[in-house]
Amino acid sequence: MTTSASGPGTTVPAAAGGRLWEPVAWWAGITSVVLWVQQVAYRANYEGLSTWTDWLPGRFLPFAGRVAWDSGLYLRVAERGYRVEEGLEAGFPAYSLAIRWTTPVLGDPQAAGVALTLVCSLGTALLLWVWTTQQGLDLRVRRTTLLLVLLYPWAFVLYGVVYSDAMLLVLVLGAAVLASAQRWVLAGLVAGLATATRPTALVLVPFLVVAALESAGALQVPTTVPAGGGPAARARAGWATLRGVRWQRGRLRPAHAGVLLSLWGVAAYMVFLERHVGNPLYFWTVQDTDYGHGGLLDPRTWLKASMVRKPLLEIQSVGDVLNELGATAVLLGVVASAAAVGRRFGRAYTVLMVLLSLNVWVFCRWVAPGGRYLLPVVPFVAAWVAPRLDARPALRTGLLAVSGATMLLLASGFAGLFDLHW
Image (cartoon, rainbow, N blue to C red; front, side, top):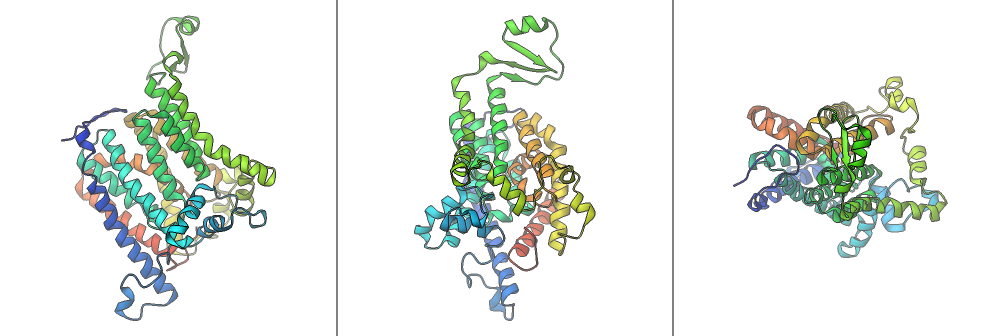
């Protein structure tokens, strides 16, 4: 029997964490369908579908339909490391290193990348189940949350695609689970591995800091500004106030400093880049020059000038339309729900959602990558939306069906059925 609650940091009976077979079963079923669709799309593009046997699974290598676009970046780093003349430093190293270390087991880097992504996506399903249990959500809501994430349109990158997004997502959920359990040192170590996986993982640093402050009671965000006492009296009592935000330093413990370990991954990569090319921020130099992302202080990026000036530049197929319009809708939805998600699960989640949304808007000349870049916060939005959908079964079923169909369409585009820009 599960119990539900409405506040952050809720504890629930241990039995509520059972039924781990359920996320495994849902993941296995959805994964099987996506893998088959990827294979058929790949075959349709490169050989055609001339007989009914062409629709059967298993004829192509495991990586067919799952290695494209930036997959080559991760695979080349895994096989040869970073070379200045190749300009691959925009890709952070953790995912490529994991491929390198698992290649001897599977015998091929591409197969190792597919397997690694699948393992990470299974871990995502399990950790999401654990996190929703920690938050006191009942069984139906947990199931809906899981399906919203597994059928999210850009979740196709979780099903064997050789991209680092699956690894980042499982690490984000791991950090969230450990933060909910107040295991701050372990949460910092896991988040540190995430910051070695993708640059967007840096948003985990303020997320964990705020989570630790909230958990300790050192940070409170009341609805009204505290009255009385004056600044001097509050300072003597260990309190300070800024626009209603209150913190009490004396409530912090040495273990809370463990969240700062979340910087170890990006710090290690920056040390490597300093020795590699003499510039610890070289990853951003490569990203800006070779991958079409805008500058932090460039207003043309903020205003999406490229989209306005040449609206059809990156839109050449139905997949591109879904990619651009859908990503914009997701971005707006994440921003609109950030405050409510924070009230339900903790202010740290608002910080995470707002900062990741800013990352998409400020650094991307087009919004389209946002559907994939926002994947780390989708589980928390889904957990907030799920109870509302369960009260409307028809809407729930329709949304899951449309989302899943869109995901399969985008997976087909990535596999080569049509030109999907990534």
